[in-house]
Length: 481
Image (cartoon, rainbow, N blue to C red):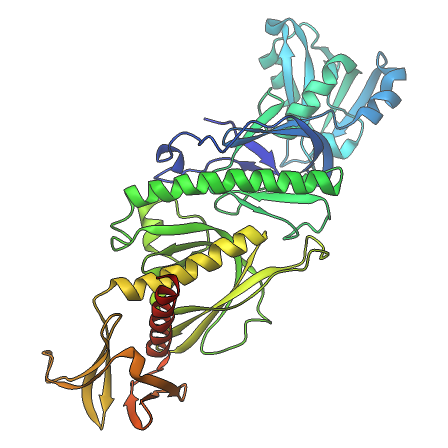
């Protein structure tokens, strides 16, 4: 398993879900390649640190460089000087250091990490790489690791330490201390499966990239040297994530298809959205990250990447794809800055009115892929079902209005639960006009004068949107035949 990586003070790993994607994914496809090591910066403990990164299969390998080379030069003059440091401890806190070494390791007891806000950090006189020589006058140069730790944990208000800085071990110890709580390795692998890649979400640095874990709780921020490197990394990581996501689609359709009512996932991945219901405007709503999935029947939005079958069964938003229309998209001009939005909007007819979703994606390719999937999935949904039936009233009587892709619109009487006789039937080529009042009423005009007015009992938008999708599907079929 790849090791965890400490970013923003939080362990960044694969999590503890009950159905790890790692166990369901096949090997990384041939579209994912190793990439040469690239120097950049990584955000750790509130500041940018020099690092290098490389793409290693389905992981991002990040190596931290020495973060305090300037301090090394200034400290070189007194590397061999023995210093006396007094540390005042609070009653409810310890010293606040981690140490390595000891007699059993044939090396001095050396401070390997200083914890922020603790006593050793507050005194300001200790450094990672300091060898501890004495503790309250007791010599620890020949002490075991356990004996030295016991002295450092002494229940006293002050500790007087004699220390000596060892430059030759400092670079390694500082890197290890920044990367993780207890590890000697200087390189960490960040699993990329179902991660979210974005720019200008929380970090507004023009050359930065943000890589979020699938549950959005952890973030790895990278800052590149120039615009070309930033664009290259964004493209490379995006392509890798796309290939991994396609493998996740295949795994999901094998393992969780029954949870999705036997409706396979056509496309999924991270987007930003803002939503509104009942014909409200979305433009003033805040952008929120969502993991989106389009199946043959529904448009699903999740607050985090669904790792388990139970997650797939509980989307934050579920909208019928047959009643969903792509209404507009906006592609930024070539001269626009990288932060310029690339968006498209979908509207779905529901019994409460129109649910609008504005989508924001990172590249024109994503725009084309998502918008095309929405359109084709909606058209296929109305074409593949036998019929879509709506309960309504005509001439103040309960009726059933059915929509069939090949046969058109049919109205039947509805005596109880059984379908009654056909009251009227029209093929789609006879339909010349539609109108609705946004509340319940639909008027259908057939030919020049045949007007049928129906009371849908709730918002007419599900019927209207399904009708328009059905008509566009038939036009598309005629255009390509």
